[in-house]
Length: 169
Image (cartoon, rainbow, N blue to C red; front, side):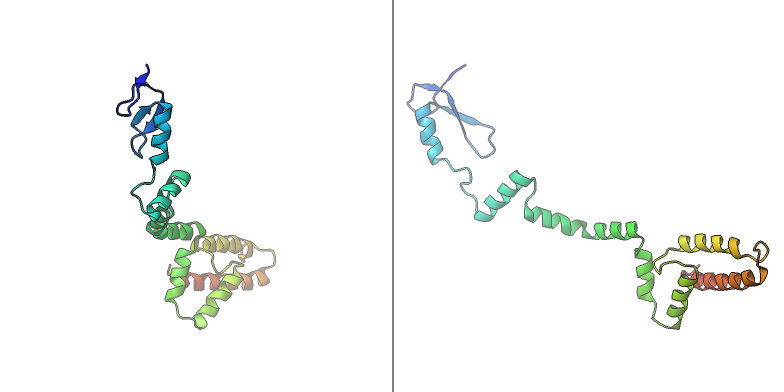
């Protein structure tokens, strides 16, 4: 169905659609002549500041504006930090490290990690697992060379005891 031109006093067919507002949900129907005149004078960004225009353009182009992205990132920063710490397993180690004073005990703990051949960032579970494996290997009842195994087992057990105190277990 062809509509009549929406321009006041025009009897031609309204074959050209022109937006009534920025939401682009309602339209005028003009003849070609009046559509060209309307479009020449219509400004999509009328009544908006430069910042609002830029924000609208970013939202339409990228789905989110820089201002909204910054607000979202700020709101999620604590959660992102938690996830990073959880995934890397560093949170509990770092928290424990900040509460300890560097001392002779720190050297003892670092040497205990070295005895068990573990990184200083190892978790308590990693310590337990490594200790069990080494204890099986060097236990005096099961080892072939009883003298050296007994000394090594004592060394491993002492290191495990230090790490147990370190992790407060």
